[in-house]
Image (cartoon, rainbow, N blue to C red):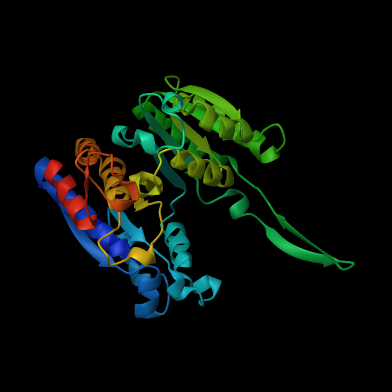
Length: 358
């Protein structure tokens, strides 16, 4: 039997609860599909600060590098607000991404049919279904460029530099093209090429790589137009690829179309399919330990882990189908309404239901 190694970073707040439910679902899925999962547990974020004094111990980096993929709950909380910036829980998250060479962030924006009414967009705008994948470059651009603050003649100024190299654009473009090949063969590249030199290089590089993927239909949008189109006609999009800052903004916008942050998974990928998988929501310390968290975003992140790092697409599909069916039977508090026709349940029961339906 094939065995995959997963390093688990439960993190802080609701992280341990939602990760436990995800492992429950992953184990049931592995059993059904004929493979095994072997888990190694390590510390990240506030939990690591409490145990070791730093948010990213070297032992955690080593454990992640030795695995086939990494599953993360959530990090952070007000308990560590007095830490210096370099030693806050979030610094551990940025550090592990850098240490593992994770340069591509995949964030799907999906509306499950039972949750169509939860979207802020009208049903006629959404259409029958919505499934957008935003591919965001994660380690370059303005967030990592030269920056500084200056003062001259009593006037302060600050600058941040947007810089991309051709190899950086090439590698994120190929991930996006490969993603489009596995989906609906449509790719929209988003930039600001009418203003920015970095965007002109981005667009030219994407067009060059497009010649290697003749089966994928490529389009280009300026970022402001893309932001408008996402709320005007989101169903026109399949895969969107864009830079770090534009992707940060557009993926948040696209995710809100789904109606609940508790449903949104994500993946951060490097070379050879290795990845770190986590929900996009935070650690929610105000509800930690109350069996109130929604585990579905993390469970769906587990499905992404199976698909993109372990190459088990049928297993991933079984989890996604089970999550969709579970919504017709039960809801956690964040997605529950009295007229939804489903039972109000806690975190553990939601995990049980998904596992039963796999």
